[in-house]
Length: 631
Image 1 (spheres, one colour):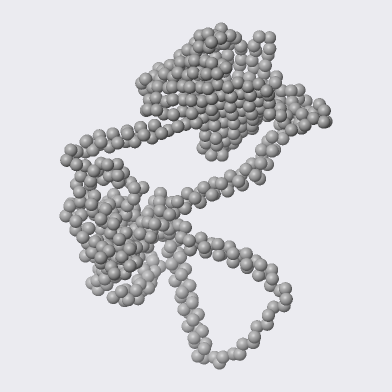
Image 2 (image 1 turned 120 degrees about the horizontal axis):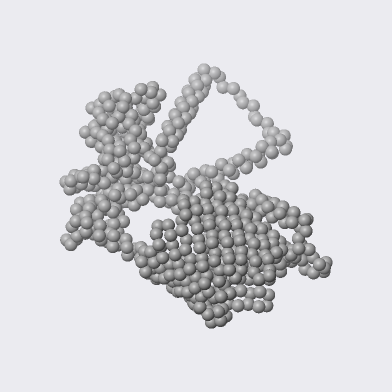
């Protein structure tokens, strides 16, 4: 079924039902063409408006009057027509249409996949700030020294639906020493459960590896990896993972070679509503144990802590780390942590954007004392809070505001164009609508007094604004009448010339008024620029034009935003049509949902609210001069 995102429904444009016959469609097109054909108008502006409306009418008629195109449109909408599904003599059934559509979608997905390239990278910049924290000599530089740079980046390109190629490189520089390598890889899905991946690391540390991964069951996976290094020889690794329960997952890895890397690794991760935990144990050439916990403080902030103890040969290492991570958007986050261990006191900063991760470990001191530990624990959170509160958050809000404004403007341009088309169609139907209104008034039939299309809140606000305007006009008329009465009953008074204020008096008020005037001018410019179409549309003339034999018909399942003189004034929101009308000079009201089928006046109910009835009569009286002019 066509969606609103594809534009106004062709059935709504012609105001016919989805099961309308060819004769109904032809009759509706001819009736509308009498109003919207450009040759019916001599005024250049009206002719231009008619050309826009008639083009839409002609487009709708060409599709709905052709049985093959109409069948495609009913199933797939305008997208199906644009994709080349203009059905000929070789495709006649719905099943054949669906097969052709599925083939088109598969080709479209394959083209999108073939152009999909993903870039990933890890970039590590290590600093030494010992001279800043504990300088051994007052003459040495306090600027932190960049000691190590490690860059790793990969590009993954989808060749086919089952094959992905990878190319990347790794560079590591430590002071005056460095190494680099190039990585080539290919991944192919042998089936929905089995993949094969080959990787070649070319450089000083050349390595070849082949890995086969298999989905054993819905909750279990397994992988076998074979490696070859020119110095270490062959190596093999077997790993498996299983979902132990809804919240717990276990992983087991067995490294069987080369000899210096033999190990058995066991890990269990758990995910709960507000926190996650992970524990691991490694036994082999080196023994290590680690544990980590992360707590989701709120939707954006995560606090984490971890500890690790490892023993290899005659050395014992340990590290305890705590920190936090803040998520700025769905693909951008920053983090800051403090680690203390056998290597010293290290502060870690990180930035993650998409598939790229930047890390900045800074060595503060190798032998911290109590004062250094306290300063390292207090200073980073305080610095982060200050930067977030007074620098990052204002900049981020400004950035988000700019993006929101740009997005609103892009949507507003299309919405404003649709509103202008609706206004143009309303101008063209005005003479016919006035003639039909006079006929209904003369015979006491269906008289559309007011019709508004939009959200409930927008319609209520429009009613309040109309009451305020009418009340203001009544007050102005009353004051004008009182002034005229006074001019006829009282002699004129000689007005004394107004003395100018003393010098300096009122200057402060002038400055304030100038500032307020500037703000008012800015707001007026924004309103005059027409940034957004109104959220509530007056469709009174459109419904008067649709009146035929004291009846107005709306068809089920078609959005009213596609009717001539209508537009989608509130995209993505629930809209209604509120109609106030007279039947036998009695006030009635009907509120219809956007896709509700109904016939007026059968759908309406009598108005019992005296205020609404008075507003209806006042609206009708205000419109009478315009009807007389058109007559």
